Length: 80
Image (cartoon, rainbow, N blue to C red; front, side, top):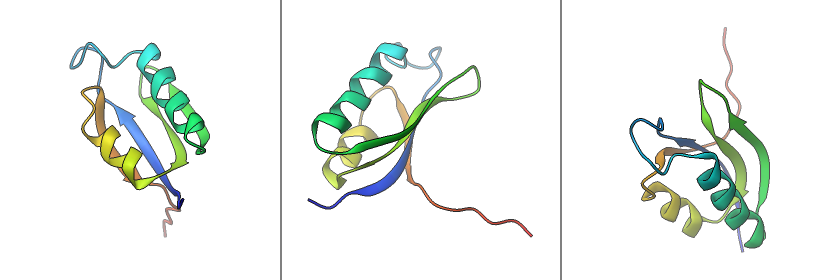
């Protein structure tokens, strides 16, 4: 199975009752149990979510999850 690297960003808890630490753990466990890899977890006042390598099927599933604001490809950013 092919895996790509993505960043999953959660909505604010005030915008979705499912945007909790428990849901973060649930989705990261789903990545790991499918053979993917969690590269970073984000749980602060500014951002909740994670970066990881996982399948296109999981990306589609996460994009439609009520707690998820967006899923985007993870990559390098360069500034001048």
